Length: 183
Image 1 (cartoon, helix red, strand yellow):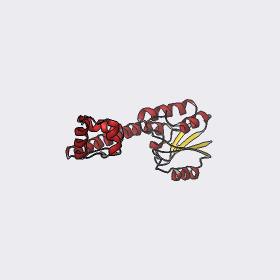
Image 2: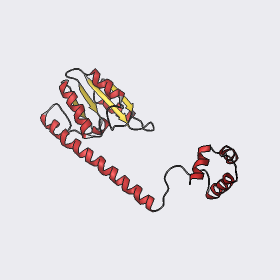
Image 3: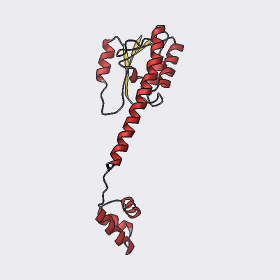
Image 4: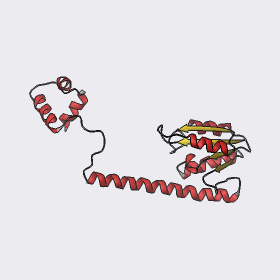
């Protein structure tokens, strides 16, 4: 039997195009989910699919990165499939067909390249964030209180006002007042 596996990383994404492509490629059953691809532990549909497989079954994905983002996870999944006598095919990566020796070799090489690419992207993102911080870009939620309000809160607190009173007067939580006083 041919099983399809479709995955997207976030709730805002849609996997319907993957499901359609997998059905068109002959997948009789398609398991789909919205989950990060970093590891197999947080992907219950993939685990369900792997438990269901019998010798001779083939798992089909639209792209290699739909099943794993790290070489280690990918190779672990492929080893499990091989032990169970199952195959793996990626529609977007025609070289990836574990039913033959060359496909298994190419999968090993390409999974290493995919992991390298992910590491390079992570480093570029970190460098971009560092550049933005150096320019003064502030990340995170905007502060609820401006500098003048924080100064007034500090003066009132020093004069005996309680954090609960200040929180009520400024329509914020006590934690916000605490952070204003700590800054």
